[in-house]
Amino acid sequence: MTDENKKRFDTSKLAPAAKYVGIGFELFATVLVGAIIGQWLDGKIAWETPIFTALLIPLFVIAYIYRLYRQLTKEK
View 1: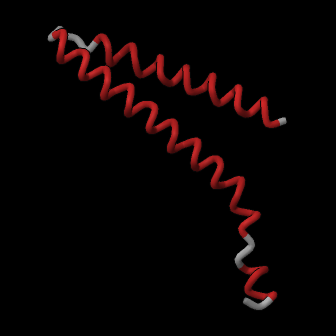
View 2: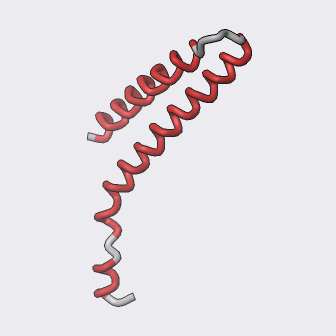
View 3: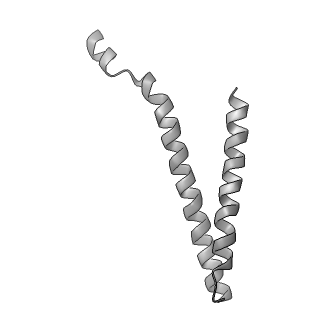
């Protein structure tokens, strides 16, 4: 690979973007897991209102934000 191609494919500029894209995917997965577990629990209990889904999604998001905060403050 020539020097010109190396400059054109500089991946050091992509690292910060990849980090934040990863955070977005992790948050999406957290909400998805909370919703799936909540739906499963609501199905087992057979209540009319999805109480566990409504409680688990915010709980999982808060736990994720706390973990993210701990991770980001640890890196400094």
